Amino acid sequence: AQFLKVPLQKRKTHSHVPTPATIGLASGSPERKPLETRARLIWQEMLQTKEESMCASIVMCLQHWNFPLPESACCCTFHAALQVLGNLTAKMTRLKCTQTFEPIGSYQCQACGWLLDDPSQSCDVCAL
Image 1 (cartoon, rainbow, N blue to C red):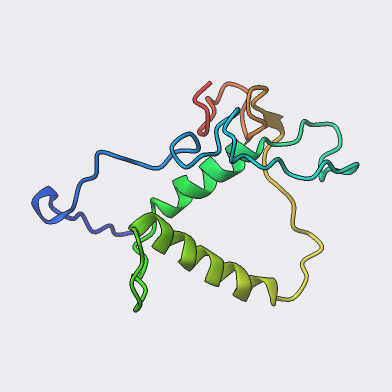
Image 2: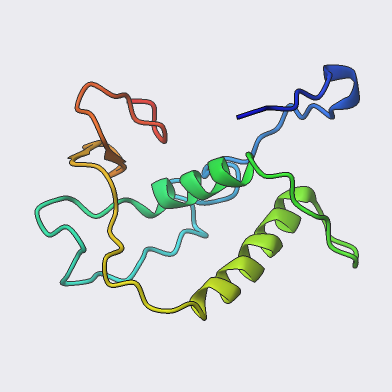
């Protein structure tokens, strides 16, 4: 695979990177709305992944995209990225069902519920 490196002087740098805490999803935030408690999980023998961890993994993914900015005004690039994600999610919801889809990872971070491939691997979400 070939990669394109953007010189630092041409790339914007941001000192603030959205995290679950800075977007109001950290534990104890008054805005936090927990996921519905469900009797069934896809992997019953594992803990449910925390909502904060799921949001953090989405933010981490978005930070790796070079996404188009919306034609209409948007308050910030974070919400522009979420708008792109919402559009993609709407398109993907219409795709054909895939009965073989399942999460990857046989191990789990006990702090946040992130699934891991290797028990010696550190957690990408909470860094534990």
